[in-house]
Length: 286
Image 1 (cartoon, rainbow, N blue to C red):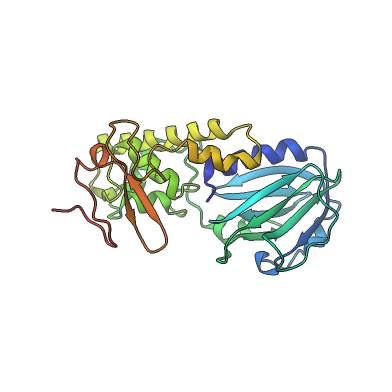
Image 2: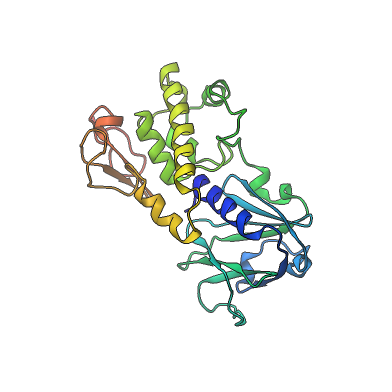
């Protein structure tokens, strides 16, 4: 799933390639991907692209005051083409869900692999009409998001920090992968309760949150859309690296599996050398 750094890279990528262009047309190959009905896709035709913005993991194209907003979810992606094919999209045929054609013939497809379809697109007059955007917590890269603000958000929350970091209503833009990375940098257990963190741990977590995301944004910057997934995987310290050595201490990276996801961590760096139980409602083995 693309998270804040990859979505920001896509914003920058599209902003560069759509500057001075207009929308020729928007075609749907999956009617279920569009979650709104007014304005219709035809309302975008002929409109100039006035800006590309990010809200958490949502990407927003401002098209003459009408917004095409999309969320790539777990298996969605953006596939750019300098010259889109002229073939007509057929609903239900292939991975393409939506196609945006620009006035110079270039454009992109939104694609989604697998059978569980979560990719979502919205055409709205105000981005706050998108429910997911209206509920977003603060952006962790915003200038006003300081350590004091973060500490106040954590205070009294008897929730595991891993879950809080992934909660889009708590903090916008962080998902499963970067929450693993942030907690490894902060040297904290994924299952530590937010309310129990001492001031020094809160400071470490805040610094890890900001530094990890900022570094990932820089690493992704300037890369073509097709290279972002591989770049993300290659930059991971623990996420997706089960069984490999921790780059800090050399211990084996471990995993906790759940019904539809997993997390990775280093016991030496994060849990005092104690492995986490690999089952639901995991807790430290006694």
